[in-house]
Image 1 (tube, rainbow, N blue to C red):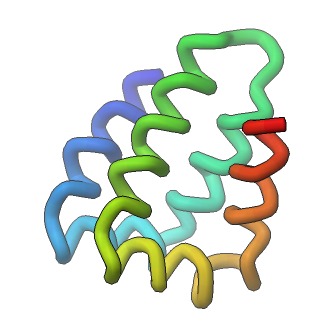
Image 2: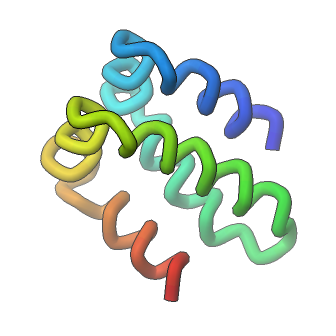
Length: 80
């Protein structure tokens, strides 16, 4: 939960969004969305991905360049 919250603060910066996507952290956040043991972890990961995708550059980076779109698929699955 703490890692997702820290990344959420980092995602508010342009350089932070790029670093999160380039380092594989966005993929890790997507896997956290599937954590069945902790609703707090899922909520923190979801909030961080929301912050990340609210900006145009973050949204483009996540949709186009991170894990061939797998993060978007996991986000949609989490909503269903």
